[in-house]
Image (cartoon, rainbow, N blue to C red):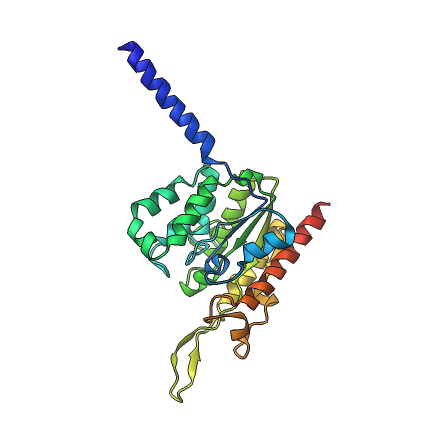
Length: 278
């Protein structure tokens, strides 16, 4: 019996070791976190793909559509949202494993297989990423926080992860612990131009993105406080009512032109980070 027990223990030990060895096998120079704008559905080249092509650095797209910076339940994308918020992703990174993401998409297979299959693919890809090997970590969220009316910040608790600002600060702290050598680059949310119905005179009513400025300014403020490079898409992309279709295919997501210009702004931030470290 003792021999059988020892054999079983050895087999279990080998399985654990093999799992641990194989769990993180992919090394990337650039890891990009973000929302559906970074996912880039329907684009010939997504922003992360453009970054990889222009820099020659191996880049992984770790963006999840519909997600927020802040950790909260039941806003823009329903009960599943907190799992993929930047606050949660950075927490999983700090714990050393994204296993919970993979378990969730496998448990809720119909939802992800039918509606958002790319989320399952991204979760499984992220599970293998060795964040410690990254030279640059890019964080770009905020539009969904604005649409879901998440608090911009909590003046009583700067690390309140249910607010945009608190989640961003905590994410930076967590990722610095995970990958102290990586340069973290923040991306402000670009403007959107959605319509919320028709006015009395028959014209379309533009959804007010005025509050988005508060999130963008908070991102700039936090980036400055940590001394981080910032790719400023809010002020850098000149999106207006009369030219929105040049940048946004549906009022929210990038056209090919919008993605290309946004990528150039992110690339400029990467170059500034590179020059700073030379």
